[in-house]
Image (cartoon, rainbow, N blue to C red; front, side, top):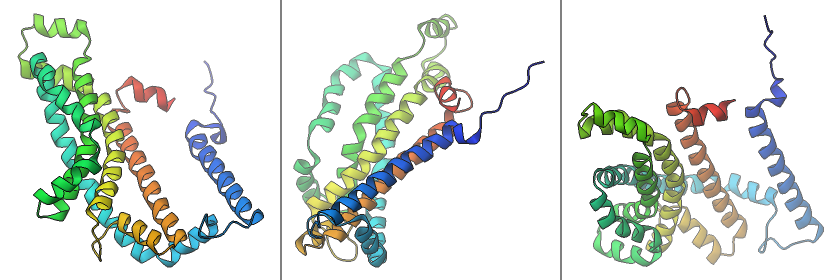
Length: 271
């Protein structure tokens, strides 16, 4: 009988995935702080991390209110892109002709800068929230279409032949074979898309130039730049970056929750 050898918790994969990035971050922040103090860098050029943290604490209420506005646009855009992108991918997977006819137009969403089309959307839509959501959704849409279409077409040829031999209907093949095969690709597209939705929301806010109490973080960045309040500008940027990381980790956790118990790609990461 072979005894099970347990790996010490300090050497576990999950512990290392948290501790090493945190250690690297602390070292980089320490080097940033030391360099600013050693060369006496002016605050209006590059503030120290401690100054940024103090500004974040002082302006916490204002910045968090703006962050909530940006997050609302991000979540709405992400939800819209997920629904529309998934439906388009299903349509592409049903017919090669449909995919060949419309996929180049889907690529247009990826290559057209949102800053170029945002003014038109803002003019066409009277509601500002709807206009910002559409702009951000355009940025987030393509990864879901491309990844989900690839996943729906990446079924095992042997299993596809078996379903044809069983005379399965198109709906049965989609539900029992194509969708389970496409789930890892779909979640990969969502992980990319959630970050792009945040970027699209911030860019759309820049273009719209919305201000006042209902303004997002882009407005705070613009105002801080006009007032040469560089610590507040860095604090807003830090909030956007932290939000992007949290969104990615959230989608990664959702992927592990959905696929961890049965798909080999997640099983390999858990080892």
